[in-house]
Image 1 (cartoon, rainbow, N blue to C red):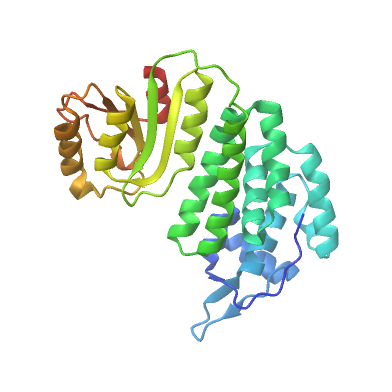
Image 2 (tube, rainbow, N blue to C red):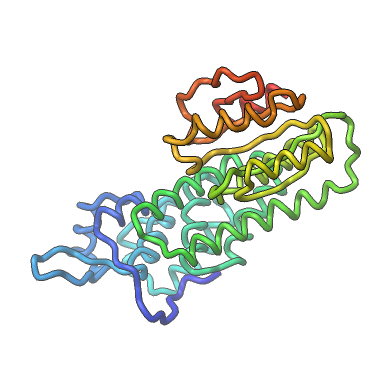
Length: 302
């Protein structure tokens, strides 16, 4: 478990509002702690604006964790780095709530700490199962990553690191299903449209479909529509499922649906689409396409 800071070439810079967003601690509270306990020592611009580093963010996340377990700020302020680390290790053994887990995962991401990541995810999977862990821990964490990414507060390497760990975890559980019998005849082909790379939810969907007894074919990221025709030619009647997060762009959704309809209108195949990009969009007037409000909505329909 890594809480001590390592030397880096360049630290990222945060505003006090970003620290508030990521830690859950109000900006005015942070200012009070600086004055009363000297917990953080931010640099200031020529116009007296506070500038915080990722070292400050990590420390504030640790403080937030300890406060959430009942430790008083006056006691935290007296701890050195090792004492804070030991207190967090101790608290993790007896704390099991979403707030605690999300903060630990943030620290794991910022510190590139795979062991710390596993210390949260593995026990939760063992206790509650993969599906509940994904819904209660992974999805909120992915949402947090998205916010931090949009705010330019994490670097690409940190996002790639944690995404790869999540993918590895999901694929490991899918591999464990290899001896599960296929009870249902329907085959689902899972893919993402061109330029779409956010595949973690699609991997989880593959796991859930296999749990239900369906055969699945996983194509992954950025698949051209024309390639799907070849899948049909080799496999016959199949059900395609895709999740739209950033692509196709809203301007081109109509063209995408029309192309799918033109290529598959007489192929005895069906397409199921879901994802944040399709929120509020009604199913287009094509018999080959159904839009689902959520993954849960899709799973209830199959």
